[in-house]
Image 1 (cartoon, helix red, strand yellow):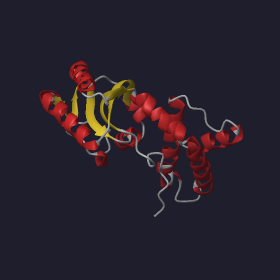
Image 2 (cartoon, rainbow, N blue to C red; image 1 turned 135 degrees about the vertical axis):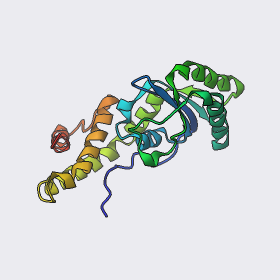
Image 3 (cartoon, helix red, strand yellow; image 1 turned 30 degrees about the vertical axis):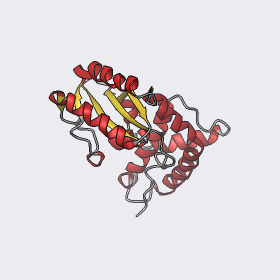
Image 4 (tube, rainbow, N blue to C red; image 1 turned 135 degrees about the horizontal axis):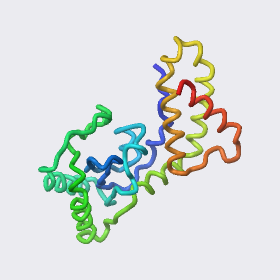
Amino acid sequence: MRDSSSPELCAGEPHRWCVYLLTLTDCSAFKIGFSCNLLQRLYSFSHRYFEQFDLRESLALRLEGEAQARRIEATLKQEFSSAQLSAPTWVREQAGGHTEWFSAVHFPDAATRLRTFVAADGQADLADPRALVGERLRLFSARFEAWAVQQARYLDDVGTTVAGPAAVRSELRSLRDWLDAYRSFGIDLFVDDPAALRFVRCIADRWY
């Protein structure tokens, strides 16, 4: 079965482990969790993560190891357990972590608590989640461009011949989501080949 819904930007060398507090753009809740690849984790929640989460207001505590990240995450979840909420309905089932969402009212307290771990560990530091994700997107921009052109050519060939639009809608949506992610982070694509960018965007916008 063909699986081309992602250019695998989420793969590759992991970053340092981090414990994150991710706030939602609708200010209803925040997520407590940990990961060594924040882009991969965000993408697992929603392919439109750049719209669903307010990464400018979110926080990430970078650490040296997984065990430490697990311990801090568990501490935070226990301390704010009384504020636990159900996961948003748009969170993808396969992402897991459905018990780790909390009322946004308690985000300032959780952020203050997260900062105490910086003082307690000289190797820990706070990072900007948006900067971490943007860095990874930039790192893999050339890989993405190659995937996007290949995907657009495939969709252009089959889009009107394979059982109508429904058969390729998910792949069109994925291409559009990745393009929109790069645009959301202000990262220019196909700088040396604007014709390729026009072609890819034209394909991605079909039926939308």
